[in-house]
Image 1: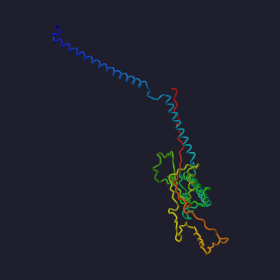
Image 2: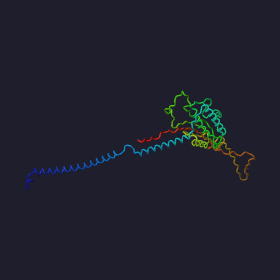
Image 3: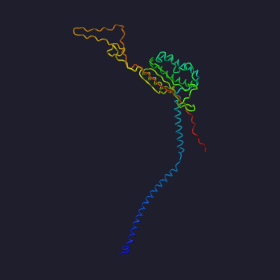
Length: 337
């Protein structure tokens, strides 16, 4: 028998040593895997850090030049658009308050004469023609404020442009009635002691887009209403914006289809039909119908119940004005340094 077999201590020690060596080898292998994984993570982080450090914190020179060019192109397009709008508005021309009164008197006389020629009636009462003054009744006897005269003159030209549409030769004469004309007042029309306009821009500067409005109310045929509306929108001398339209029939109630003594429900104005001749019976001659005597007036034609009424339209119009394009400084040039 071997001496190792007889020595139980040596056998136990050897077994423990082998188990410890196996455990150590397993832990060493596991630690090696974690080390390799940690090393890969560290290398990836170092590569990303190096990439970020090599990048420039600002765009390149070519990118900056592209941004400047794009900004200049956008500004040019905006200025061209603003210049185009500016060319489609009536200019504000300096004028004195007495000269405005003369211009107003001449414009009223010309418009009233055109209305008379084309058969356009004013107001709901014939006497309204004597008080018609294009919405400037308060300046018939007294001049406006000095600061308001140029603005009023431009507004007057815009209103007369629309009034000329009401007397267009393409419209049927005698079918239009201008019921009312109202205009908005300017801040400059108030006296100097009046409170300032809270909506005015700070510093007294002009807004990019300024507007003033007026409204017209008239009776016209449906065809005339469409022509007037299209003429306002397509006007080339002044850019108008139609803010609101209200349209209704002149007569809100439909005409009666039957009247007392009209059992046939004929339209108003239609003559009753001629009585039918008595049919002939055997042995009895029929009743002859006598012809109309010569020179007798022809029978009245039938009238339409619907389709001839006019429409009552109210149009709120805004007159736009655009400020001059702002002169912006060009891009700063770099020096030799």
